[in-house]
Image (tube, rainbow, N blue to C red; front, side, top):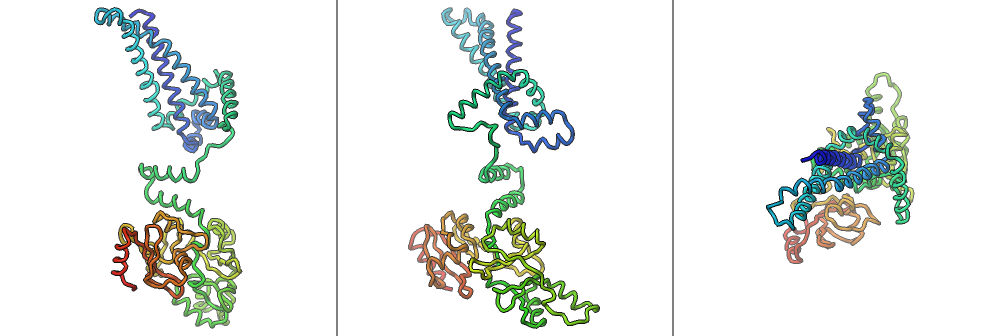
Length: 448
C-alpha cells in the first residue's frame, strides 16, 4: 500500500463517519420531541439551546442533513471504489484469467464500499439515533448548526427551489404549518406505548377515557328525571329528613310541586349541623338552606359543563330538555367518573355494571347503556340519532315490545329481559350462529 492509497483510505473513513453523523442527525431531530429538551434548558445546558434551535427550524436543518449526506455519499463513491479496486487488483492477478481481473476487482470493491456505506454510514447510526434521540440530538446539535451556517447560501437556494416545486405540486412547505398529531394518531401512539411497557394500564385507561370524555354530552351521563331523588318545599322538615335518611345523598334538588320546578339545591350537612346545634333556637325551615343551581340544556358537552360548574363553584347541575322540562341532573362525581371510573363511598349500594359479559359474544346490558358503547362493544352501527341508550333504541325499533321478545340486528339477537315501569331495565345480547341455535337458546331461557 502506497501513501496515496493510505490517504484515500483515511479520507473514505472520514467520509463514512460524516455520513453517519448526518444520518444520525436527520433521524434524531425528527424523532425527538421538544418537551424532552425542556429539563436540559432549565438546567442551563448550552447544547440544549442549539438542540432547541435545530428542532424549531426543522425544515432548514433537515435540508442541511440531506446536503451533508449527498456530499459525503458522492465523495465515498468517488474515492472508495477506485481505492479498493487498486488494492484488490494485485490479489486477483494469477488467480483468475487476466481479462477478468479488472472486472472482478471493480465488482468486489464496489460491493465492499457499498456495504461499508450502508451499514456503518446509514443503518447503524439510524438505529442508534432512533433509540437515543435525546442524547444524539444534544450531541450533534452544535456541529450541525455550524455546518448549516457554513453552507447557508447553498441550503437557502436548495430550500427555495424545493418550496417552489412542492407548491407547484399543491403541497405546503413544512415551515408553513405546524406538525401535529390527530386524535386517532395519538390513540395509536398511546396504544403502542402501553404495549411497549412505557405506560401502565391505569395511565392508558385514563388517557383513553379523556378522549372519550371530550366527546360526551351531559345527557349521556346524567341521572334521568325518573331517578332523581328530590325534597319538596311543600313537605314538612320531618318528611324531607326521612327522604334524606333513606337515600343518603349529600345534596338534593328542592322542588316546588314537581320536578319541572326546581328551586335550587340543599346540602344535608348544613341542615343537620343546625339541627344538632344548641345555638339554633328558631324553627328550621328548608327554604333557608336553598342554594342556586346551574340550569343548562341537556345537549351541552360534558367538558363545557365541568368548566361552568368550576366557575360557579357548585357540585350539581340541572339539565333541561328542548321543551324546558327537567331532563335530569348531573353531579361533579358523575363527570369525574367518566375519567377515573366508578367512585363508591360507604353509602353507595353495590350495582351491577352497565355491561356484563357472560361469555364470548354473550352480554347482559343495562337499559341505560349508551348506544355508542354498544356499537364499540359489538362492532355494529346501531342508529343513535334519535335516542342515546340501548333501551331507548329497542323501544324506538318496536314500541310495544314485551319481556322475552327478541329483535335481530346484523349478527346479534337482542332480547328484553326486564322492564322498570315503562323503561327497559335489562337487555340480553347474543351473537347468533344460525337461526335454529338462536331459537333453541331463547326457548331455554324462557320469558323470565
